[in-house]
Image (cartoon, rainbow, N blue to C red):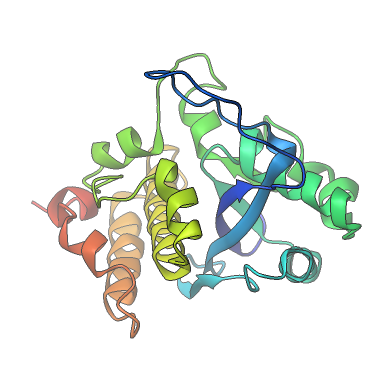
Length: 242
């Protein structure tokens, strides 16, 4: 593992220059667009230092300048080279980022020239928790919502899920999308800490210290972006308190 950890999640909408939604019959479910047409509108991150202490929670760049947002993210990765932690990032977040960088000509040297970010079977570089906790897809059906509930987090019960992002974007509710993205980022961060415990990298006391410190830092967020998430959390289960 590298010295610092960056928990990452993105929210996207289809690029109208590349994708026209198919006509659907009544009762049919609209297909999920292919990765190359997804345009990132929010890149949410939570940064932890080498001691797993909170550094920053926020979004990278601005949704209305996609190329600049991608370039800001790529420059951060090139400079800091943290371990990325995602949920399903190998299947979606990183391919989308790579393909949109291809579209805009944004350099992605850290991704293509550093093997660890693309090698699936190592925690170095990129730890996709969905991939590791499902034994690299040997078992199915493990969503972020399901995994979050296992450790006392509310998952997607806050009233917003990925299917609503397009509608919120069309309505100009970018702040709601950002807060939804950051909720997923925070829950992925707590799952990462629990994974560090069960994989033997942390003992119970160290896990409790790290998870409690993160919970308290998120509670102290002056923008109150995660108040709803924290209020719905089973704190005893999350922090393993009797």
